[in-house]
Length: 602
Image (cartoon, rainbow, N blue to C red; front, side, top):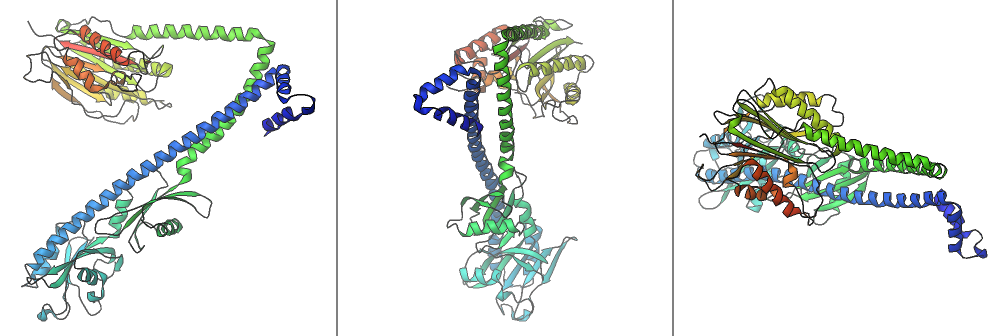
């Protein structure tokens, strides 16, 4: 408001004495510092507004996609469960129709239906009056699973429990097909609130003589609809076609959502509401379909979706004010002391020089190309690392101990100096742990436990550690969320056209996430003449100017052409292929490769 008032005064003061443009130019020349601050404030406010509304639209779109995927998953889970129940009861109706002679056999059929289908709480065969005169007017064999254990069978019908007046009996007969009932409290049979799927049974003449029913517990439906929630405030409800609550809590939020559902003709859509506390609610609803008229509702609090963004906006406004104050201070200091600017430039040059030194130190940490140690004559190893900035977060290392090649490759989350520091820590931890341990999973475990200590920045490292027994070619390895290495076989060594195949790895968590995570060990055999090619995602995700990635398939294609080449030639061939693909596009991530060739014994 202050900035707007100031501009108004500037535009209107002494307007009669000359053109407003000349007044502004005169003010700007006389007050350079203040003019810069005003322009910067306007630009910052405009930038903030654009960023906020862009982020809001992105979050809104993401929220809608997340909820839609969640509801689709819940919908499919419910539909699959209901379809199983429907199919089972439909088949049972045919079985009952073919076996009507012995009424006592119906007890066996209901018991089998419950025992073979854990999703079904209870099952009954409700006969039309006097179907079996010896059983009286009403005959309803019923089986139910009791929580205290076992399946109970009983003749449920009585004058008090006259099922001929119940929806689960009358509606399937009236429709002549399967039907899901409204929810009701079954105090005689299931002894809890259920919904029932009923299918009419026809005798050999096609006459409806009974209804096979399956009771589904609403507690079971409650469990289904509450799976997989992306937002903590998510509340879901399942209602029937007549707006009866099947699953979920009957509360004020449900009644508001139900009112919106009633106002929608096709019962599929998305609306926003406001509760009594002024909280904005996002309400989604979609029909389940199939043989039901049920509708799934999903409600999310607006604060749960946009709360972080609005908090960030407030902090950003405070930051803008801070920046303006800082800008004013810098301008004042600049106008009165040019020496300060010279010192700042000198400091920048010093930092740039330190980064260059840091880059040289980081490169010096990489192993020398020639491996040494007992059995190293059976190997040829070459590595390549090109950081996207002065320093990077990728690493690789290898050394020979006890006729075993210990090697690793890793990719630290993020870029720049923080990633480089964590890279150096991971490198040192690998060297330290591998000096006295030969199990890659144990080495990874040690690195992870140490890396998790004091990891307040929540950075992590994807890593692959391998131990190759040089005399036998036996490879034991552990993968911590890293891209799977590619095994490159020389032509004629394996009877397969696939010369480049990805190594099978188990999806362990990256290093630095949980200190109590247990890493798994894997083993395989490397044939003499084969090459183990390891890389970071800077290779597969290298993008050209059209934002297309190089991709794993291109990597395999290039490697397949290198079947008979040595490691250095392989790295050069892959590097040339990547450069030819990205051309003049800027490198977006660190690029690291490691090629290990197990020579054929002479």
